Image 1: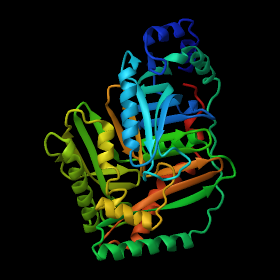
Image 2: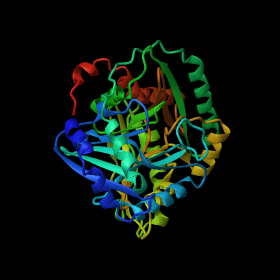
Image 3: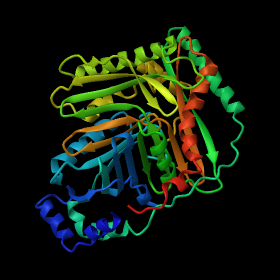
Image 4: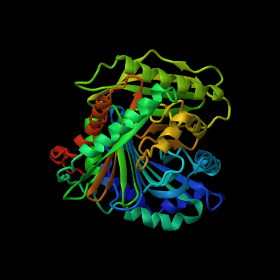
Length: 446
């Protein structure tokens, strides 16, 4: 498959085809050429660049794998109007986009509107190269600003001269966690006091776990393990050449297809040895999340949102209560309008939203990179989907930071909540320590 891609990139008429597609477009207009590659199954992980930007999104159970390499165009924003800024940028892209079939952009954002991070607070990007394998059919999409087609063709050819490094991490012993755990438990107790006093109904508290390895973490190896271990989750990653933020999330924030809105409400959590998924605490959490999502969606919908019967969602060793919420959007409603209305849901922030967010800010809640924010895929017609960025790790050389959270409500047991975060850490710990993955995966070149 890679040989076929190299031939396409070296084709003498490639620049001419792009110029014809661009026509009289402005120099800043995105131009995207899609090339069908035929039948094949590839997760593309051995093509992750060693440096520079990349985006990865996979839904293994549905045989969907996408890797974006480099940026043809990008827009970053922060602050309370960050989603409006990205919305306007995406609208501009879509209006000017020259493509024969819908082309794709990626996006990600932090939990808080003004948080400092190694990644942009909110980022929207059209990848220069997009590799797709969907239901056994592979495709290559090349994207560029209309004014720089010639240099872009030469740059693309350089992207396929290497294979991503696949090595297993050699973890060093973890630092003692007793003091950090006691500090987190103290925050849980403070949250419970304010919940009992009626100041807030729910608070989601995050904690982190720092790991170190004798060898640098290889994102491709970790992602391959997540693909294998979490086939029913959405596997995601964004790298900038120095850091890689990656994870496996079971939760959709929102999807928009035409006017059809689909939202997941996941709150209750169970794992081997925990309280039952149908316990009162889990049911109460789920009720708060569904209530808030329905209220947030209502102003943007033609008719009141509809919720499905309560079900379950598995995510490795974890199980969650899940409600599917559907609605029909008002004309003119965009995906970013929906993101702005929904984020943060009580599943990652608390309830009611404003007092919960104030509490978290006052009590020094810290969340790295895009953890509990969003990771999205959008197309040039305005359709798209965002996932809640959960079960994540931030990798930087030999360092890894994992994050997990738990929802605190009346009746929560602090020790059980601590155990819940440990269970959630397990998703990434299993991937980071999967020393047998290399022997299973082989070294084939797609």
